[in-house]
Length: 136
Image (cartoon, rainbow, N blue to C red; front, side, top):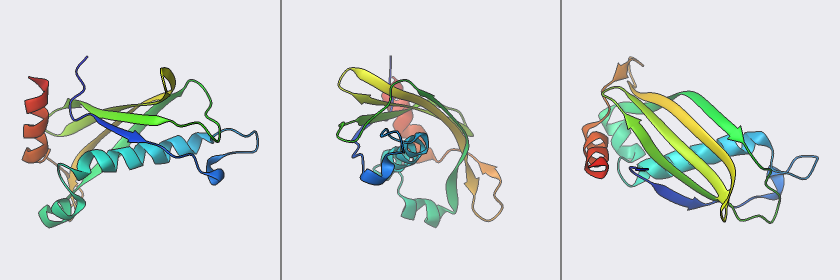
């Protein structure tokens, strides 16, 4: 399976990530997805470049399957890639694992918007070109 624009990011579980039953709270995974998405974009299309171009990614939906709980002391690794890219919309997939054990799998959907009008715009060409190079 191709994983264009793949990033891998070690995740540190903090004490405040743990809920009352001593596992990572479900909302923490959503924060980790945000961290990974920012990391994915950072090397290709920085926030400074986006602001200069007057665009920003807009997240429209997150789907996540929580498969196994994580606990304080686990050393999860997050992987994320752009699985689909059209002229306007994007889909990102992610996995959070410890070793070969997958703890969560997620999909996020969105588009880029003009910061003044908040209307959808084409995916920036730098992202389209980089993605196209990796799916060949």
